[in-house]
Image (tube, rainbow, N blue to C red; front, side, top):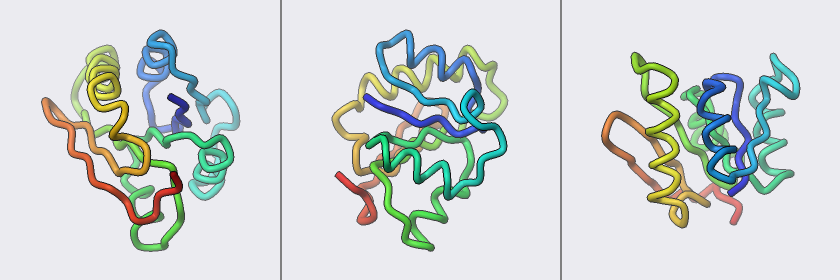
Length: 121
């Protein structure tokens, strides 16, 4: 699976997904400080899911109407970065076929997946 990881995503999550065999473009490595519209544009161009811990992307997709191939929102505040990486890795593994075209929220012990009418599949 292809991902674009927003700057808000902890580096251990990026590293873990890469170890799992996924292609991850990390904005923190590419161009720190990039605005959200540009991040979504890169994800769209690469046909990638957006991986983020920033709720603002949900607003851009649902209220502004920008299109996406899917978003995975990481809501694991308070956990060590390695534990977050484990949660995200398991969520991606267990829900791989459901993630494209969806807005997914990964929280402590739960993964919520909502199909998006703004998705580019």
